[in-house]
Image 1 (tube, one colour):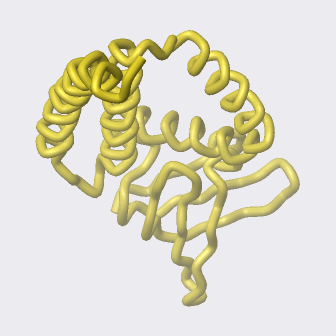
Image 2: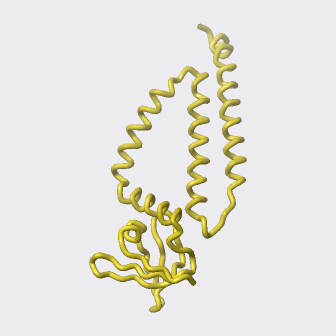
Image 3: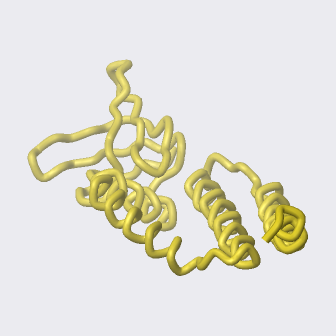
Length: 163
């Protein structure tokens, strides 16, 4: 097969792939622009950003089909890689899931005073100054900040004093 024949057969497929991905990208971009940042709902904002990247990934998978690449093969590779990454990041993912749980159940908000009593007798008391998917930062009365993993908060007793 000559180069010109190869280009004639490949070019329409490439244009179709680019068109498919462009449509998904436009949808993802519009979705991302619709996300409003709100300090009280920071975790929901991060979850919506993850959805943005999932839309792009689905678009990429749909875009490779016209090129003759089987998405099942790529999905198997990505799945295996995902399992390996998930096992190596188990602690981080546990904190992330705990952050989602805390946010969805509105255990506290920025500015609230909290007291977290752990099973080992450790007590953290102060004002919530920052919260994200992985940890919560508490400003104590002693002008110090304590970073508490969200898993610790979820697994222990939390008393909230609305501020």
